[in-house]
Every structure is written in structure tokens, then in C-alpha cells.
Length: 390
Image 1: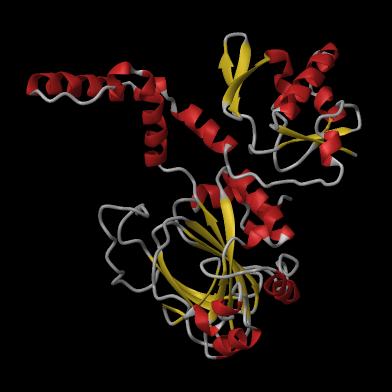
Image 2 (image 1 turned 180 degrees about the vertical axis):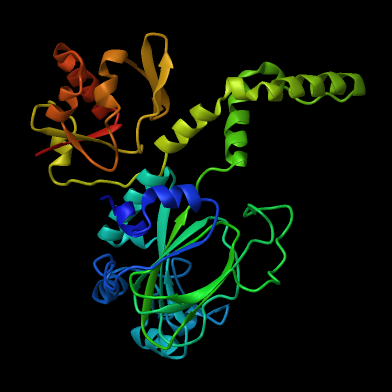
């Protein structure tokens, strides 16, 4: 069972993707403590003590209003602002909720979970942490421009979720969705171990229940049609006529309009949706994997059987057929590899490393191992793959 499967259990990945993902809200009850190892109160204390966290990364909200950072940060006139433990405790005692964005960058197990979400849903994933103690809510009823998966780590929280008042709203939309007027589509308490999936555009608000509560909101940003269109139009820069300035006279403007319409009509053949999705998947935000002090020696050393290989700044390689070879874009250039190496190179991921033996075993022809070694050495020199030793 993968990290993502454990989150949607006992509902199951298949049912979640078929019935709910990008479609409808779902509450998944869970057993108490199943998320306890993701991030504990002691780990949160250590994060707050050991990192320089200030707004907008860390913030306090109470009843829909941001708490003035001067109440919980040391004065700037005495050096770089840091958390003021006394001021922080006072604000939280007065009903403020603590919000810490991108907590996966500070908590390794949360980072591993985000990798599981990326692999399962083929999109970026980041996690914000919410901690509450009393009964004041952090935010008023609102909607988010991304998919949201709420994991209740400990304690409880009451939620109200309303259906969207504008389907598939965008962050920078031309029309704002009107506030909801109907009763909640779902209202209930999220208990320790529960999960709540809230699709983009669904209105919601959450209330602490006068007890310590800790939850993660996993934000997910699958591509929209506008993302595809922006990518596809950028590919049309190969056409000289589209790079030209727009004409001033009406007759030439009409001719240009017809040319634009023709090119847009054939956009799917020049920039296919499958090509876009392949590149999107490849460029899902990777995690940096730093292995000091060995990395400066292993990276440009000889790749041997005890070498382990992973992608550095791509989620996976976006291969496209190019005659008898395959090509992919990385580090600002186009790379071409023979088809014989595809079974091995297509295994490469940022989320995990592979031994050279594992990669070589995927080759249809064992004699291609020499070519694989040469290719990996070149990719290592370009910084596309990371090389470490067992």
C-alpha cells in the first residue's frame, strides 16, 4: 500500500478517483492515530524553535482576520525578527490559530507523503499545517482555487462545506463566485484519523472545538485547460506570422485574423494534449536530495555497479519519439537517446533512486549496458541525474 492509498483507505484509490477526484466532496472516516507519525506536537515545537519563520510563511488568524505580527514576533529594531514565545502563546490563548505553509519542507515524513500524492494524482502537492485550541475560526467561509485534502492529525474540528456557486472557478477569474445561500452539502466533525476531500471551488469553513487540534491541508493543483492552452500557444512561436507585430490596416488585420484562426484550429495537432500532460508530469515539483560529503566525489566519478541513480530536477523524463530514437528536454537543451536505452532511462524518478544493476536489468539487450553507462555519465555531468554510492 502506497502513502496515498493509506490516506484514502478504506475508501480505496479506485473509488476515490472514479467518484470523487475533481468531482465531489467525500469524508473518509479513519482510525484514531493513523496520522500520528506524520508530524507530532514535539516536532512542531522543534520546527518553531529552530527555524526563522515569519509571515507569510507562518501566520496567525482569528475570526477571519490576520493577527498583527508585532504581537508574536520580536521587534525588528533589535535584529532579524524571530518568534516571540510569550507573544505567540498569548495570541494562541486568545483564540488565534497558527498556520504554517509548505510544512513538507520542514517535516520529512510529510514530504514523503507529498511524493505519494504526486505519483498517484500526477500533480504538484504541498501541505499547510493548521493548529487551533479554542473556538474561534481562522477564516470565514471561503473557496480555494485548488483541490484540497484535509488530514486530521490529532484532536477534532467541525467543518461546514457548501457546493460551488461557480463551477471550476479560477484564482484570477473574470467573475467572482457569489457566496453560498443554500445549506451546507456536508457538516460534521473531523476526528483524529479522518480525511476530508474538498474539490476546487467548494465553499468551506472550519471551527476548533476548544481542544488542541492539528490538521494538514494538502493542496493539489492539477492542470486546467487554460494551462494547456498557454503551453500550446507558446509552442506556436515557431510560426513567423505569429511573431510579427499586428498590422494597422483593416484589410491586413482581417487576413491576420484568418491566419490566427487557422493556426488555433490545428493547435491540437501541433501541440497535442498528450505531449502537454507528459511535460506536466515530468515537471511536477521535485525534491532536492543532498548527499554530502560524498556527492562531490560520486557525481562526476565513474558509474559502477554500486552506484545509485535518481533524477535531480525532474519528476520523470518527458520522452517523445523522434524517428528511431527518443528525445527529452532537460537543463535547457534537447537530449536524444537510442530506443534500446528507453526501458532503463524511463525508470528514473526524482522520488526514488535505482541501482545500476536494476536499470541494466531492464534492458532488452544486456550488451547495451555500456551505452547506458556512457549516457548516465553524460547526464550526471549535466546535473540531470544524481549519482550516489551505496
